[in-house]
Image 1 (cartoon, protein in one colour):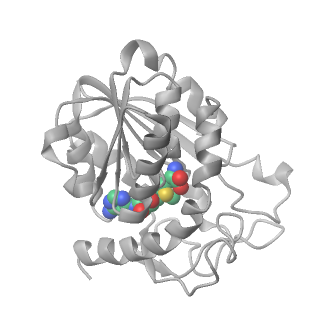
Image 2 (spheres, rainbow, N blue to C red):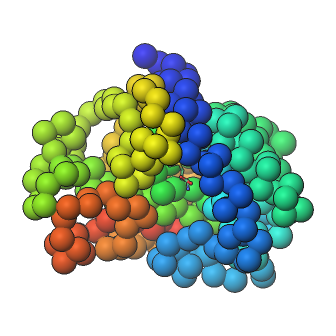
Length: 268
Ligand SMILES: C[S@@+](CC[C@H](N)C(=O)[O-])C[C@H]1O[C@@H](n2cnc3c(N)ncnc32)[C@H](O)[C@@H]1O
């Protein structure tokens, strides 16, 4: 399959998963109306003072838009959400309409983010399970480069690449039979979602389409960004998780390893 086909297949899988996000719309609107910010603790220090420096934030792979609108609640003057799933973008539209928020939405492949946004972003934000679905990170980094203003920042908060290799079910650290090679090359396919992310009930009990991921090492994540002419300003590894990926593993063990990674990048 070429990249367009892989992304089209993933769009189908995420459109099907959007039903779980649609069920949350009213609760998310209430959360946002109360000033809620759906970020993990490590993200706050990287998103500090948005009010002072962030006119436009572009959220790539924004899913149902709650995190996008959290950027607005956190000080960004205007937000833009981009996602390949029309249904996910529909969730974002309903939330911003209810909140009368300064938000615009684009349903498209991240690699085709509209050129009208070029050079307009003070902040590009992405992550929490986003980059594994993008099968050409060089092309993705070129998109980020064109979206950012000179001096603009990219902040990525992602699952740490080392978390891919562990068996998700066991109560001790064990390499996954299928995914347990940090240096695996090529795509990995699967159907359905971990229960701790989206339950079958939330998904309406329907069979889920096949989806494709590329797992990258830390170096494979960073080198395309540098190759696009962007600059790495800060990298941190965190014990924090963004969802409960290893529900049976004692916290005491989990916390000895990095679960997430922060990359703060700028356009010179
Ligand atoms: C795990 S979510 C992102 C994290 C988000 N914070 C959330 O609320 O779950 C991944 C998102 O990436 C989107 N996506 C996957 N492939 C994409 C692509 N090629 N272009 C744009 N969006 C894509 C999916 O539709 C999905 O909404």
